[in-house]
Image 1 (cartoon, protein in one colour):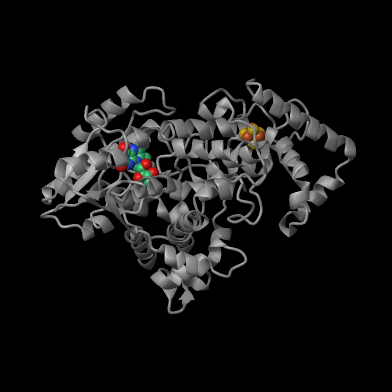
Image 2 (image 1 turned 90 degrees about the horizontal axis):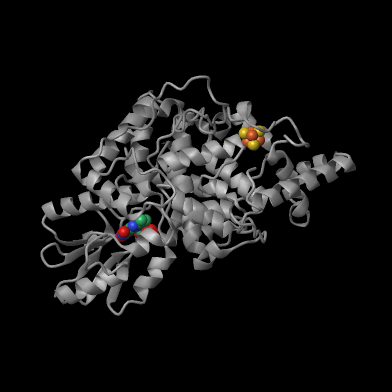
Length: 508
Ligand code: DLZ
Ligand code: SF4
């Protein structure tokens, strides 16, 4: 009897575990565009379009390769509306009693599949380099789960940038060379863009009709939607941007959303590219002398270090991790996150770029939107939902430890050894946002004081009990304590007033 082979929208890899396990002559592949997946957060229209277009093209390739594939489009009248619903419908249609699945990257779906009245064989997703078992044994017995040590193990395991037993160049990590402020001009035109073909156009029309109110611009749409295009985007990045990627990794510019960033995460995360092919290609650029070590190391660390690490944390910590709120932050997300007006130039640009591209780079996510959310005390679950909805590369396995852990410290310090908070100074150093901002980054109090300057101290003051003993934060508290008392009171009062105005819906 035939079995059903489930392929989800972020499992578009021909060597997927479930496909390797299946029998092309007897089994039936099931793919479905379903409301349960499009609606669990209000995804950016570009994200839905990327996934649907890539799914349709993947399905076509599998059919060409001889698979019996049943594909459901979102507007099919028979659409059951969810992945389990679609599997049940196809089981009835084919008489299949068994499903072969590759483990989804989200507890919600793992649980839903586990509750089905069909036999579901869940295979580990071995497109990732570290298995659950690998990560568990790395984590076992450690007091702190720091990415850096995990990353070194991954370097040894993969052999990437190794010279014998030693790291290439003698250092594991060249991050200290990767913090240059923004350059005057950028000589990279951005990631490779692809003109929509017929399949993509059809999907764009569907998404336009079905999700007219989701936050984000659907058009113009230029993402790659198949592996051949994604590989061209990779080659384009390596040739034109990688050499400078390291130096300006943390810089932010009003007029340039991408700087030297690769924007390959959407392709990696839905399966169009594999982590090792991307890393090997960048390593080769270093060996050929076309890209410097600090750039290549920084890039490879994101893939085999950070990406694998935060996935490991998500699965190690379990379903409850996403619900943590260690700092008890309860303030609602203000309208400015959904495009409402704001006078804060940094937030306005970060949100605008997100609306336009469904993308912002890591420093915008960490030090602008993330930092602001944390120092304002926004509810971490609402923040997480916003990131999940807004970014084209966002899936639970990758976002949860980034938002709940790294940016919001809502896990109490599993991912980050201290909260990532900063005043306006950091943003001023790393961007050109402050120059024409309504607020003054130099003003510490008063009507035009940069809100980051006020909220930074407000955060430290209200969480003093938790953080003052942290050796990495002692200096911050000493600076605060040295300020005269009147000034401290003014800062706290003005920060409180700012938050009240923001929560009352005023433009801040
Ligand atoms: C994100 C997403 C969206 C928007 N739509 C679909 C869909 O219609 N069908 C599907 O199979 N997958 C979709 N996905 C990706 C899933 O949400 C993803 O597989 C899970 O969240 C696990 O990572
Ligand atoms: Fe952002 Fe403050 Fe700079 Fe304005 S002055 S752009 S609010 S950091």
